[in-house]
Amino acid sequence: MLLNSSLMQTYTDLKDSHQQSPSFFMYCAKIVLDFSDEIEVKTQREDQIRKLLKTFAAQICTNCLELNLQDVQMMRSVGYFLIKSGEMVFAFDVLDRIRDLAPVEPQSFLDGALARYMYFLNLTGTIGDGDASTTCKLSKANAVMAVEMVKKAVELTTHAITHKWAKRFDEIEWPALILLHLLEQAGNELTIYLEGKDHQPDIMQHRISIVAKEAEMNTTADDTLVPSERRGNSIVTKMIDPNVPTTNNKTKFWPSVDLPIDDYHVDNFKLGLVIWLQWDTDHTDIDLHVQEPNGNEVYYGRRQSPIGGNLSKDFTQGYGPEIYTLKAPVCGKYIIKAKYYASHQESKLTGATNAVLWTLVGCGSTVESSNTTSIANEKVHEQKAVLPNKPIALFNTVQLDTHKEKMNVFQVQMDNTGKVEGQLLGQSSE
Image 1 (cartoon, rainbow, N blue to C red):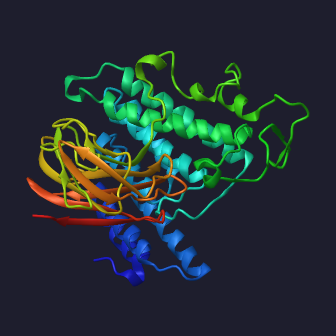
Image 2 (cartoon, one colour; image 1 turned 90 degrees about the horizontal axis):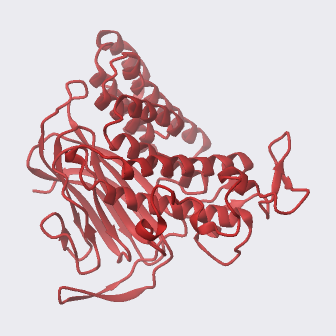
Image 3 (cartoon, rainbow, N blue to C red; image 1 turned 180 degrees about the vertical axis):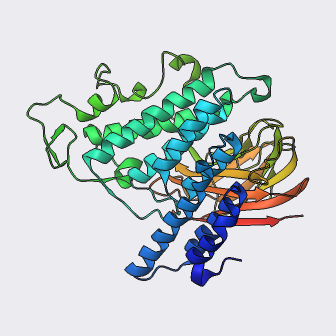
């Protein structure tokens, strides 16, 4: 048993006798990461200790890669863990390697896109712990990186939509198109803000506290932003594509050659809540259930709800995903549940199937405080939640080891002040 007072020493003592066991490294890494999350940060030293433990957890986990087993499921587990521990750049390397090893699986592409979208939100001022009050200063380096993140994510998502996949991945295009719209929206908002062409109050102005007032800038040797010598030399346009006109921000990030706008693009695409559930073992069936604040449960047997919730296709093979979307969330708790039916590909290396959950909040404008929605003659009067000023991405994984049992995985609480709280659950609901 790893003792909280001597995590590093206990791990070191046990390591030699478990050097060939990925499940040992994953287990130890999880314990260290969980312990770091329990530290209540009140001082700078406590913050340093917490960061040190997260880094240590990531280092333990990457021992799995040194075994050189080239097992895709194990590598996915490592990639997801690196995201949880905040080591996003290393996670990209692992996810990109998975794409090389498993190019016939759309999840290999969607994982890379989702991770880059989350990293984009971090770069532009969103913290993944649900704190909607924090802003960051967007340096030239971060501006370049943010745009590159979106460009690469769009490329990966476009491939997931346009490629012809095996039969078990049918309709993967539906969730991928949702992600593509979110990416396009994020990229366009960043571009408009940096170019300084639209100074009306919008979500990006709350999201970014930028160092310079204009984006027509060049870079000095010390990586600071200075005004350009001539107008029209837009650094943002150069970062995206020098051949794209600057007069139309709407289509800069949309892959119109592969996916014609008239056929695939939805104008004014906004979602207040997106719950994206996938899993890390192939040939697996996990069902997404979302219990809304009024107690109504959305699942494969009831895909729409009175407040506007909608559930995607029920994937019974592959890696999912199953997605719940809601344009205008109401105040209260959204309890996310996973029902683990079957897996025909249990991992002998990591020992279990994991539910992988991306929760996206506030991918659109603030919603008014009240509204009435009617579906199938059902009318409800709920107080609408106010979305945060900046989109929030929450990422979690939960181990599933009990077949045919519904498990509470995560909980999201929203209110009428823009506050969002997420809580990992991980317990049976039956």
